[in-house]
Image 1 (spheres, rainbow, N blue to C red):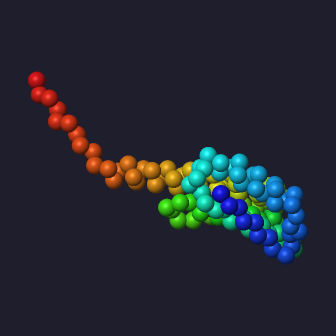
Image 2: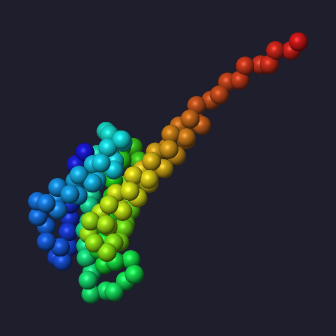
Image 3: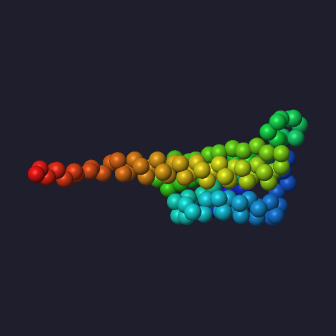
Length: 119
């Protein structure tokens, strides 16, 4: 799985931040293994805006094999909170999407019922 990290001009990107993002994202989506080919991470901070949900934003977009991209966004008071919250949301979103995909595949297979035996 490839993880691409993008930041806006307000965030100083460094190895510690990259390692933190990779660790959190990999831990959140590890159970999906080979089904995820790439995760795009977009980090931004808008400190000029006083919002109740925090000025730090993390958007994660996962590319899942044979499925449309899944994207989530989280705002937080700190960048670490935004990253952790987005990773949790992504985990739930992928789980839900793959569950629906699995259910569709189950319903495509015809079910042949055995005739009931009459006594």
